[in-house]
Each structure stands twice: as structure tokens, then as C-alpha cells.
Length: 107
Image (cartoon, rainbow, N blue to C red; front, side, top):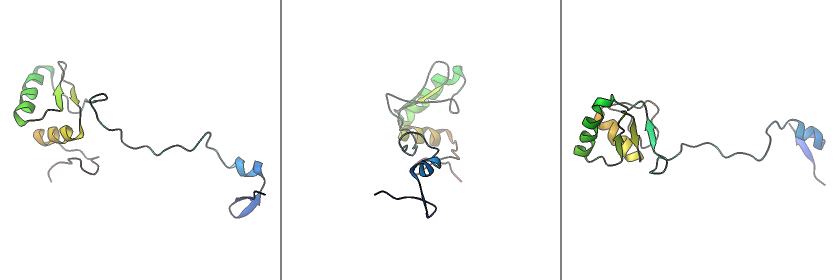
């Protein structure tokens, strides 16, 4: 026999399910999606004016950053977390929402 309890009191099956507002199976906690070649990060915050795209691509090549480039319209496309950290360091930018292992900027 199964006994259903809510807040320490015995309840019926209907009473037990009544408090459950979530429908379907329990969900997995959300985590940050990884950046990859198949799903690159298109960053508008790191984008530049379209006339500066070639200049910044040359800067990344000079610094050895292989996982980032700017499209013709100036949008920054990043294919790895390492490249994102390198781009932030090269440009002297901050990330106030940086997680473990992310470049947050110099203090």
C-alpha cells in the first residue's frame, strides 16, 4: 500500500497530485550551451563596424586566435570558449557575467 503525504499529513492521490503544478517529467537544470564549430556564438556585443572587420581579423591572426573572425557585416563569430577569452583579452573588454574559466577583464 502506498501512502501519500504532503507537509507531513496523509492525503489522497488526488490531493497529492493537486499540489503538483509541473506537467510532464521533471526537467534537467539549464546549463550554458557550449560553443562549437557547428553552433558558433554570433556576438553582437563584440561586433565592429563593417569597415573595421578586416582590421580586426588581421589582429586576431597576428595574435594567433584561430577560433574567431568577423563577418563582412562586422558581426563577431566565435567557435570556442578559448577563442572568446582570447578575443576579450586582445580587445581589453570585460564580461561581468563571466563564469568559471571565463575572462572577466583586468581589475
